[in-house]
Amino acid sequence: MVNKLELVEHVAEATETSKAAAAAAIDAVIEGITLALKKGEEVRLVGFGTFSVKKRAAGKGRNPATGEEIKIPASKSARFKPGATLKAALNKAK
Image (cartoon, rainbow, N blue to C red; front, side, top):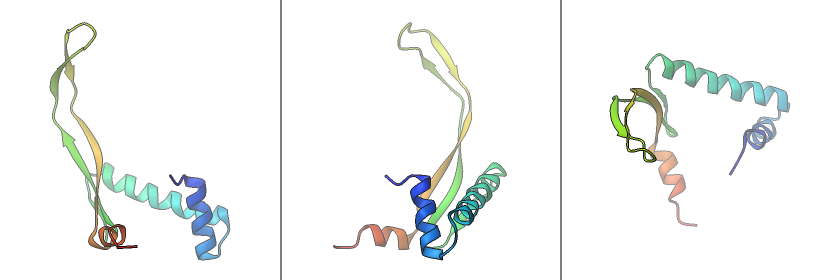
């Protein structure tokens, strides 16, 4: 697993910038994607993939401990669909 700090270090090294500048750039990208998704827009990064919002309808469920019926509220979640270039990179023969 790669965490944010490791990603910042990679970006800083690859772009020959400071870690602070790389962290600011990564934060700006994440903020831009988040704002677009909050507006209900898709974010398409050609070759990498598409971020979108999926709506989930309200429903009913059961509390497994008591068996009591509960209401599950409607919600939204972020989805990611990988692009062709990313899929190809992941499935290349080594």
